[in-house]
Image 1 (spheres, helix red, strand yellow):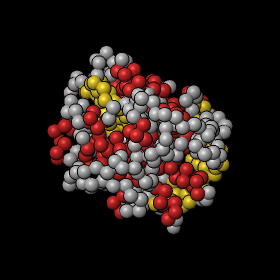
Image 2 (cartoon, rainbow, N blue to C red; image 1 turned 180 degrees about the vertical axis):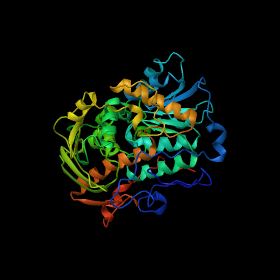
Image 3 (cartoon, rainbow, N blue to C red; image 1 turned 90 degrees about the vertical axis):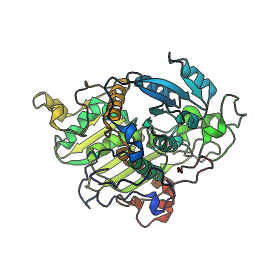
Image 4 (tube, rainbow, N blue to C red; image 1 turned 90 degrees about the horizontal axis):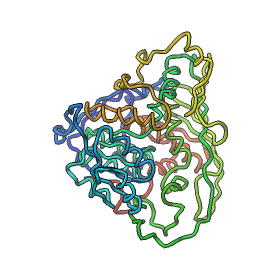
Length: 459
């Protein structure tokens, strides 16, 4: 992140661990942060592939077709695999649910091979790129395993389940030189992009406050335990999470309402909106206070019924997050304000663009923006640009617009609020050390116990 100068590791085979509190589980960021200044979240640092992967990391011809292994094939997993077809052929599909993988296979005319275990897919030498559309608690391990197997990766947001996972991913991507794009596609939506450009260029004066609305978490339970369906590998679906009896509502779409597998709206919508907010703020949080009400229903959804959060950033900007109101992001400055969501961008500074335009080329939020691509807005249109940016960066061996360093920070910001909510108190955060200040109970929540053999370690 920022202008940090990372040292290349000697080998991609070094043991990777994510134990909270261990020096090996943190990234050094002292060079990133001046005490009260913005630190340039969007500054680009090129990938440096390790020697054993240099041959696979050379730039490719624009006419080359890549070969994809797609993992996690429910709705969004299939969406991203289909979007990738403009650049690549899907040769392998993996899902722990036989019904899902067989239905997905029928969507691709190339009749790809199908797998239950993603590790068998990663063993294929003909797979260049892996797309990952699994539940959140599988993202980190699959990204790490894919990078160590020499694959480039497009992974759905949020990048991580815990802060420590993000630290481990950043180390592995740095060591291996793989290109990893996170599916926070709002960065490729022209409306969100324009809002960030205008804020960063002072079109609302000095940014003072950001107000974010995410929406309510789902509520429900208690839910009945049921026999595991014959078409589902429940143990593999659970992965690192605790082994529990099968409950239908823990699985597939509703996994996001359980802390064991996700983080509720704070990491679901938050991975989108807080990412955009931080892109514009251009700084790191140093203080957070989350407030929440929990239903505490046995064997029921366990994310908050009601929640809110407040942040202070190193550059003095404050940000609030609420679960009620108009979904979107409001940027409030000394000379105006801008509201943006998936349907609109509005405010007097936006209206003023008719007289004082903001050329796309005038200010680059990233050094490999592919500004020649047409401006697009809306989910599928934005993913078209997002996927295009990914494959352009795979060919050129460059950092994509939604790389692991900025997405580690965006997910981290979401995790900080969830930790504060669960502890019920305000927390001080050291963004250079990536630790809470003087609160070991909070620091213990930067990672979680992991169930063997699915723990995130790699040789």
